[in-house]
Image (cartoon, rainbow, N blue to C red):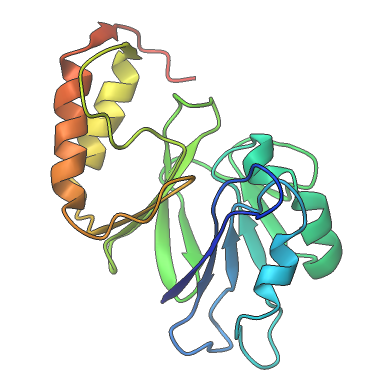
Length: 204
């Protein structure tokens, strides 16, 4: 698997965009764009990436959630590449709804979809066990001190996340975490548990 960090739009407020490719641009790998940013500027960024001969540069899009800085450019991306579009909730342009626990081929690797409502009700993370890679979207993964309030279902989800074998984290706005990812996640969970917890079974 190759992950190309396309960064953020230089002109507008925008989330990180990531292009997930097969290790050798093989024909059966699925070129996948994780989040599209605020506008269609990502198309110019993709144009300079080697995405494989005879393949569409973007065969599918996966949205970590529907906020505009992550999904606003979807219409332009669809117009240019006509990809399948996956998201947890139906917004204009989405062709396939994701489910918690679903497996999805991205590049040449399988990713598990993890529904993590908190930042938004439709927020998801994506986990590749084989390569120990985690796309976090805008889910809070680096909480350095206790404070605030967290619903009990978020605590349960985060307790599961820290059990995963994660070495690299690609977030919606920060630089990739390539060292001590597990330590950071464990510290975040510790600080969440020291904060106010709102007990509820409603994860929606």
